[in-house]
Length: 166
Image 1 (cartoon, one colour):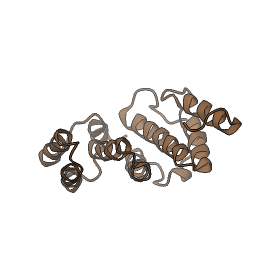
Image 2: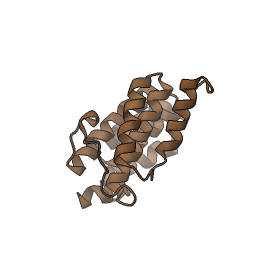
Image 3: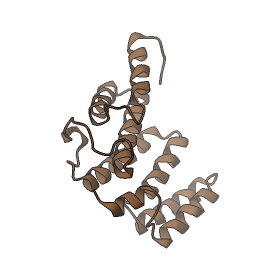
Image 4: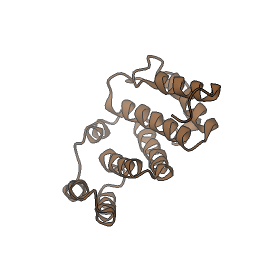
């Protein structure tokens, strides 16, 4: 486990230039071009820092650019997997309980990112990707510490025709 990455997941160890750029992005979130410019500066300063990835993800998600948000989730999965010593392609990760699923920041970052990826896959009408991501999530987090069972229930209701979209 990379304790530096754990610190980064908790928002620590962010280079000052990236921190300033993220602050600016937050202050100007109603101005799309200014926000994106600030996020790009943050990414240039700390491209794989979880705080930067989360900021990009949220920017795209709340801007209803779900495909772009899912792309950021893919990138975050690679970063988290690398920090955990797992294969960088999520489909190649071993389907077995992930140590630290309940409390360790890096493990939880991976799990929540995979859950977000599955959710976005549902929203983007990519049911196979969503199903496979949720199956892996269930294997990695058999204690359901990140609440994937709720998303799986929504997926099942959608398959049964009880819900239009998650």
